[in-house]
Length: 242
Image 1 (cartoon, rainbow, N blue to C red):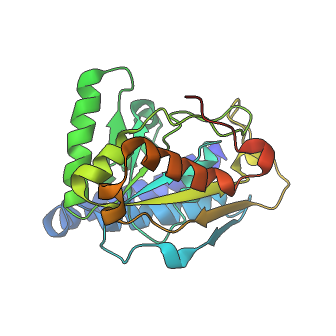
Image 2: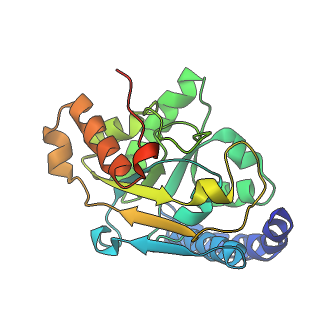
Image 3: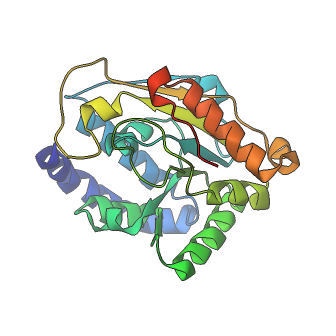
């Protein structure tokens, strides 16, 4: 998989580089053409190994309308699977992802958001930058567990910034459940295991901007987590600690 990732990177990174003058001139904020190229890269990368089925496409916002996608996190394959969504968005990701050859370079050109987890200054900067992106019509994608689950059981939501961002930017939250990635590539290693039925992504009904504004913070976090967990097998739903 890594060899194919690098091989495709040799194709797509030059395409992104050539497109950048056009992108910066015509679409400097959202950079949707770079997002499009990265989605094709992800699709070609995993095509030989597994399929991705998306349910609930009718719950997607209209093209050009910003929202925050919130999902469970089991595997590095979650990222590649999420890139099958037919919408542009920016990941809020730990800064180490940006150090992966080709991938990190492309994410910087697409203007994804890097976060230094233990750096308070970085957290504040990311929060402000994310609100600005949402207000400019750019969707965001976040894994609020903050890390990959080691055993597939859903963790507590440690990264709750997405909910504050949605409230400040007056945008919707779209909960989604990702199934099957933990079997393909467990969090504890980077080997790809074959078998199973591929990956399923379930897009739940969005929580509208108006509902976000009206909801209590704790209740909003609980509602999103419960929605995502409900589509997981019973033994993997986990129970949030107080």
